[in-house]
Length: 66
Length: 253
Length: 305
Image 1 (cartoon, helix red, strand yellow):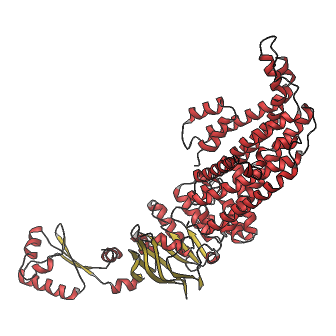
Image 2 (cartoon, rainbow over the protein chains, first blue to last red):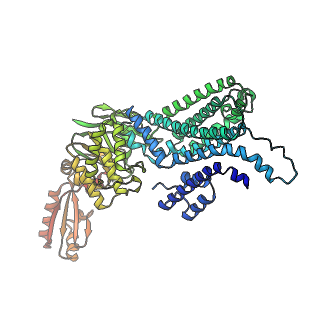
Image 3 (cartoon, chains in turn brown, purple, orange):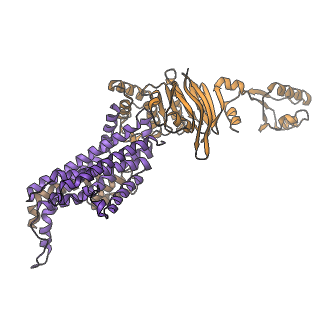
């Protein structure tokens, strides 16, 4: 545990980046409710529970054009 | 020339507004930070999870090279991500027909390809630099150890990325869809790996540029071993680019 | 002077001949209606004019300059509106037009001025949002704006009205009519009333070649397939009249509707003579007898039969 605290200054930016990814994806999911496939709940779950990969998959494959 | 810059600018705008740049930059930055952190923490983490009294062979003091091993291992994955994110840059415009308005305004077809190439390479370079810079800074701070051929090794991986991007563009032009683009890139990489089985080919293969970076850092490989692969890679890049231009000129849209 | 000339154009897709030895020319400052059924080859012809498709044989000239496939030189004279114009959805209309302007090589100020002019002409001056949120009709109108940006000598529109509702169609036609005089317009369609509304010149494409070509009034003169409509007081009168021996032959190909009957003939005078004679003979008097103007629809139906 103290090891985690020792490296916290380095881990915080990492966590922030992951949060930034998830949040941006989440906001986009709510503001543009049209997807290439899937629906809102599915994308929310994917984005929240698959760190890094989830938002990437959403933006690359799921984000609707119109 | 004006049209070239206009189209290149348009590609940048597209990458920003369609979140492509955002994803790539954030992920590359993330990995840039994770590479040294993983190298630093992993051995300790492993020891702390081991049962009491058991000595682990792995638990040596982490060294700067461990961070760069992570960097080059992850960069291959990041390159795949980059290719996937940008795989639609030619293909989508062809399948959607957005280029018709541009081409019927007198835009030369080769300008389309060249501006897409320029834009993608620039984005790749910036993302790559971000990742490299972050890993470099963290590694210098966190991990001890001197390494050789730092810039050259990074350059090799960078140019290998350009090779992949140029084949991805060619795939987009030839097949007009994302799958064709990705399949050609994948097929080409598979072919490189296949050739790698034969030692004679492996010595000069462009694949060397993405697989032998760590030996370079550890001074176990010589810079001069990479001259021929680099030249071959440059020739291939030029060939793929020229083929893209030529085949796009003949394409019925 | 003709702005677009097509000489002996042929296009095959594999075994199929889509365009078969097509020749015509479009005179300056006209609205040229390019008619044809779906699949007649209208879009193919237009794409060849734009250098997007490669002709199997034949030559195309735009403003006396020959079109070369894959090259875009002649396209500087042309503004093109595709049947379904596709845009970069992440851009706003002004940004899109700015990009178009830069590609055409116009300077920034001119583009900004013309963009505002055109956007208000097509009624999009208030639509300051990303194009991905646009409706079909808005995209069509933005399509016209981008096509007119460089003040082209020739405006080519591929079925600009097919997918629109009546209001949208009228708006697009009005816009096309308003640019007449500055620009020659070639527009393809299968909607005949659109052609009658705005075109001065009509060409009908059928199975890859022209079956009708001329000004609207010329065509109506030369293809004078006159129509005579006779209406009776009752169905009984109609039956007795048409069954009279003297004119039974005449009514073999007639069209019946309620108490009236419609006849078509190239020689309307002899038909009229027979009809009047029969009226005297049978003492059955029609309540209405009218010669109808030839319509484009009739002509079209006749040539594509």
